[in-house]
Length: 172
Ligand SMILES: CC(C)(COP(=O)(O)OP(=O)(O)OC[C@H]1O[C@@H](n2cnc3c(N)ncnc32)[C@H](O)[C@@H]1OP(=O)(O)O)[C@@H](O)C(=O)NCCC(=O)NCCS
Image 1 (cartoon, protein in one colour):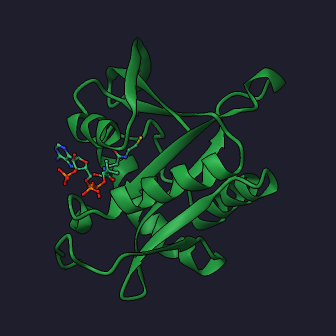
Image 2 (cartoon, rainbow, N blue to C red; image 1 turned 180 degrees about the vertical axis):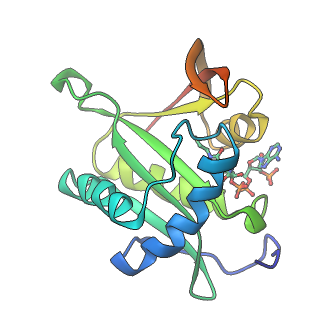
């Protein structure tokens, strides 16, 4: 993938079934090479589509960012916890293709996700960031109005290491 500038024309829209091959190509390296995701095995396209369907069943947003028709990032919201008392809170996840990081794609995605979740009546948006050293994601979320809410120590385990998670939240 070529690199791009902040002035590139990023178009954010709802994910379509045909986007999932590209979504898998974006996500798989994060699973296979990093602790940004605490999955051990990259899900296949069918599994990713099943997760998309779960978001859709709950009318939660699952969106993609495209440049020149190519998917360069995606973001989605999912229930924070299933007990009914948590129904005004959702969690989110954002992934940008390696060659497009730092070019405003993540900002465009999370900004859109915030707008959609607010319009749907949710009141809190939560991010769970794997690794206290994931400065990019922490700074990114701070830029988008999130604040740190705490650290859970050693709750993840991947590549023979214990991983902390940083909890962040944003009012909607
Ligand atoms: C975290 C991630 C989604 C951010 O998306 P991005 O497109 O790279 O970020 P943007 O270019 O939109 O940057 C938006 C803001 O985030 C912050 N930011 C982005 N990259 C940063 C970095 N490397 N260091 C510090 N701050 C950074 C800046 O405040 C930036 O605003 P600015 O450009 O005005 O300074 C993306 O880097 C990514 O996919 N990382 C790997 C997966 C991941 O960690 N996802 C989060 C899971 S919860």
